[in-house]
Image 1 (tube, each protein chain N blue to C red):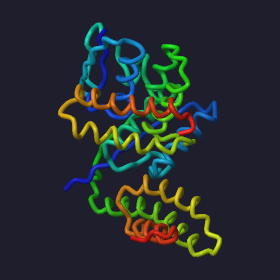
Image 2 (image 1 turned 90 degrees about the vertical axis):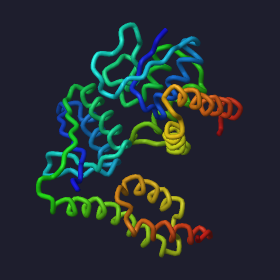
Image 3 (image 1 turned 30 degrees about the vertical axis):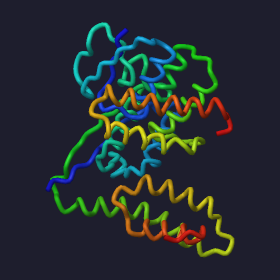
Image 4 (image 1 turned 90 degrees about the horizontal axis):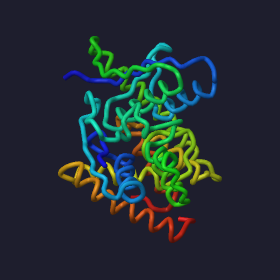
Length: 140
Length: 144
């Protein structure tokens, strides 16, 4: 299936792409369009684009929305969703000290990647690592 | 050189109050300035642009309306004034941190947390922020 999002991905879209490929659609193919670009390509599911079904909702990140929409009942993913919420946009309450660091690393990863496709692949390493550590030690 | 600013104009329904307060708190947390009770201002960067774009989406989701603008002032001289207001806002926090550090029972963990929050709103890298940083490091026994 094809999935579409805005180019220049950061912490949330990088996380969403990882989440989709690992837990929703292993053969996902990603398409990137300019921010605010007019009609989205037909037959592709949009994510992290304002107004889309899979976007920010109720003050939560798009990552959080995807976890909920697809009923991903995994405490580690729920924890990562909390991290992405805080890393992605200002929150009134912050309880994840690693969140600002995750945001910086993902921004930097996009800067060192030649394009968004590569950034998705490299971002997957970060999210795999995050998942592994939080699964190994939930008190992390 | 034309200095640019991000402007957010919005309205949210009067009820529920929680929605209005939540939007207001997020803008305060970003260190945005409210001008004449009308427009919220932030300097443009990829972070502030994204933050405000998502906040605008959240406002619409809550049944309100929001427009995000990027603009420059026609009266050039007032740019410095705006920058001054942003700096004064974080300097007030830095000054409190420096004063707090002088107390014998200084709460270092609490003061560092306040520093981190101020740092995120310090869009023009205030020199007082550097002093607060050095003072915190020295108080924690690791001066540069």
